[in-house]
Length: 464
Image (cartoon, rainbow, N blue to C red; front, side, top):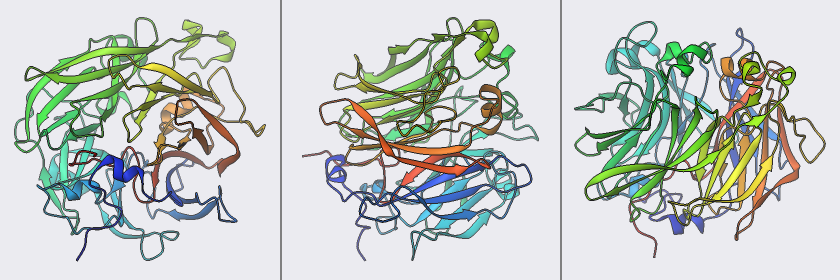
């Protein structure tokens, strides 16, 4: 028995790995009577089918709403505290956040033709965890960690949301992860620094505030998540909260430094309800306590109300709507998706306390409607971002969430995926020849890359 060759002890070694040749993309059905799907796309430039969809695995149930998903095992398995060093990066754990159903999808023996090998039904998730609406999947030292957006009850708001553990070999649910949750109630993303033994989590909202679209009164009233939570990873105990202020609504993506000797990370905040700006925050640990500071802002763009959806007409402006961020494996560049204004920003974060804008790509946007370099229309805006391990390619899709797509882009967001080329010294550009259309019937969300990617991998060993 040997560890999976796609497990890497350090971020630097992961960056030296072979280029990805296959990607997987979550497709969200626009038809309430049709099922979601998982697309397989060709990312091999030597292939005659490069930049096309190779296969589509249509799910057997309707109404799942695929969102974030991940591998059952990854480089975290090499951590000295792991009991799963010989697991494979073989299975994708794919939750439906609307149905609370979880699919286990086998990518072998043929990665181009994945198959469903197990379905964990919603009743089992609720019964064994007390949670609903499973969201983010991370492979960790104790198994598969899955965060949830809902608790008990039909609306998922009768108890806190949280994290549960799935066995990475049998895919049996073990139960709630938390021993002591402190003041944490809402949930969204989470990640960790394993050698330093802590987890960081964020907040979006409980289901009544997102399942049927954004609730304007709640947004302006500061009812969405605006806290960071810090946890003792092995002790499974809440140790500190940081309130960013109720005006900083929807604290979403967590991106710790990949290098485990670095004790900091980044957070994207969707919107400030006082001025519509989005923001990037840096959190760090010093003197035994965690701290957080707003280190970059993205302003809204003035716009003709006639070009705006009803939700934004009173403001005569488009907020950036920072809905995803992603950090390159060398901790050098942070990519920030501004889904509202139609912009993907690249920040040089060599100094994590002073991000510097290094490049930008504009595509789509609520008012801008910027075309792809090929001349084709791009619907929606940059949304889910994924960076190749070597940092040279940046992929992104365009769909956020079915009901939010309809609110902000009433003309529709048919699924698309594009690719950018990043320069080592900073700056990046769209590839005019790479554009995948998934059809008007699907939206496109999370991207996963063969062999791992920058929003999947966590490491226990320092780079030499």
